[in-house]
Image 1 (cartoon, rainbow, N blue to C red):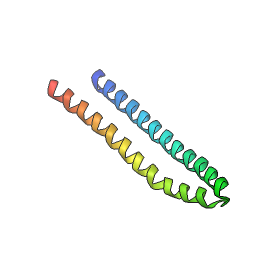
Image 2 (cartoon, helix red, strand yellow):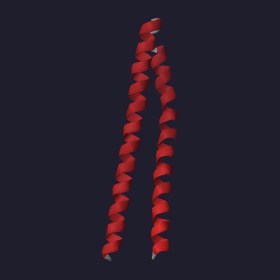
Image 3 (tube, rainbow, N blue to C red):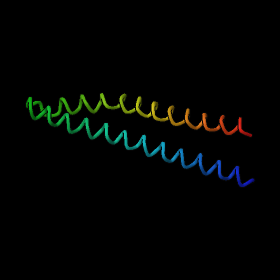
Image 4 (cartoon, rainbow, N blue to C red):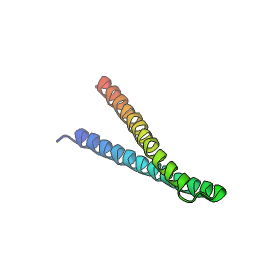
Length: 89
């Protein structure tokens, strides 16, 4: 395996790890925001688990959409860099 190919694989692996980290952090932020906002709303209106459960279930599609957005953006950047590198050679 040529050194440039190894470097390319290293960059790809690093980019994928960063993407997975971003998706994980975004998912955690959505869940935490849902829980805290739900608990606050439940405390304000004295409806113990209602708002928390609604926001948690609403957070699932939001989290999935954020995952898709981040993944597509990262893969588009990767493809752009790959096409640029291919044109230079």
